[in-house]
Length: 287
View 1 (cartoon, rainbow, N blue to C red):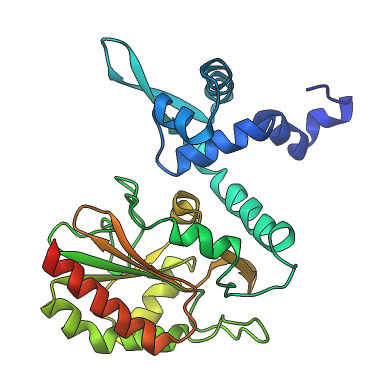
View 2 (view 1 turned 180 degrees about the vertical axis):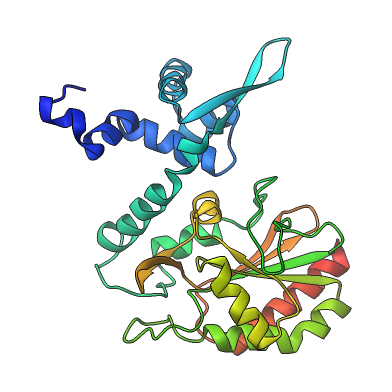
C-alpha cells in the first residue's frame, strides 16, 4: 500500500496498512469465530491456499496473529489472536454494527431486528454450531467461568443491552431489569430441570456487580465489554448510551456446547423467558 509521508504518524493509516484489504479483515473475523486452523479457514472463506497462506503470513508478521504448532507430521499450525489482534475485536464488531445498520438496514437506530432481516438470518444460522472452546468472560462474583458450566445438562445464555439506563426512543432497548427479574424468579424451575443461566451484556464488571447484588441474582452476569463473544458469534449490536450494546437474544445450548435453539428477536420478554425454560428443559432431558 502506497502511503503519503503524513501517514507515518496517522494511526488510521497505520491500522489500514495492517488490515490491508477485504481478505485480511475476513481472516480475522473467522479466527475470532474459532476457525483457527488452515483448512477450516480455507473452507469458511472459499479462499485459495496460496492467497490464504499469504494473508496469514502478513497478519503474523504484523503481530496480529501468532502460530501455534498442534501437529508435527505433517507440520500444522493454529492461528491465534495476539493481544494486538484481540484489541481489534471492537473494531470488527463496530464494522459489523455499521454494516447491519447502514448497508443491510435502513439506517434506523434500533435494539431489535426484523424477522426477515440479515441479523435474524445470521442468528438463526447459529443453530447447530459449537460455541468456541475456551472462551471465558469476567463474571459477577469473580473469576471467568466457562460459558457452558460442565455440570449443566443445558445452559441458557441471554444477552441484553444494559440495566439502569434511560434508553429514550430506541426501540427494543428497555426491559433489561424485567428480563433479569423474570429469569431470577424462574431460577428454581431452571435448576430443577438441570439447566443453568448466564446473563451477558457489554456493561463493565462493576456495573453488573451492583445490579446483581441489588437484585439478588442467583446466576452470574458476564461482561462482554471487550466484545469477544460479540465477535465470536457475530452478535447483533446497536450503539446506545456511549457504547456498543448487545441486542436482546436467547441461546439454548446443550452440554456439548452446541446451540440447540435461538430466540431472536426477543420482543415479548415474559414469553421468551418461559419458552427458553421449556426448550432448555427439553434439551436437558434429551442430552
